[in-house]
Amino acid sequence: KFIDENRIEKPLIRDGRGAPMWAPDSQAVILDEVASRIKESQRPIGVFLSPQMSNEELYLAKKLFHDQLKWQKLFLLSPRPEGDQDKFLIRADKNPNRRGAELLGFSYDSEGLALLLKECEAKKIDGLIIFGQDLLTAVDPCRSQPAFHELQWSVFIGSNQNLTSESATYV
Image (cartoon, rainbow, N blue to C red):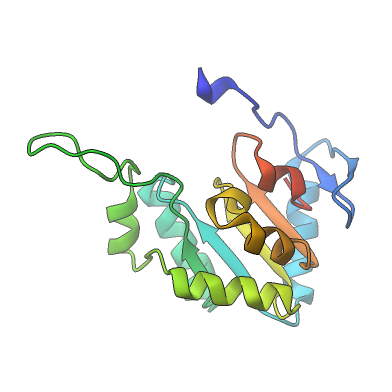
């Protein structure tokens, strides 16, 4: 089954070039390091949320990043393109919580996303926190990969390996 392929089995910290440095025994080590990075950041931090997150996770993300930390660079990253739809049960949107994300104020913003990638390339963004989606393939790789590699740090929070998880500083 897909959900069992390429599972991330343990936390991982990489050096600035993407090479694995070590796998800590617990996620607490990574949480402490990421908290330090956030506190030390002098520039904005971007957050990519997924419409595949639960409504509860999306709500908590909004409360933390937008309401408490007052971050403005929050984006909804849609991994699945629209599909077929019938007039009864099947919906074109194959993401389970896109509507919930929209009700919480998140939406897919291609112009804002393009601006964020330009800011990353110009080193105006310190780090990115990515929830579950493969940013490096969901957005044009010719734009996303150079931008991603200019970051001081990045965090991938998800269950399966992908290009983003293999490039992120903290997994």
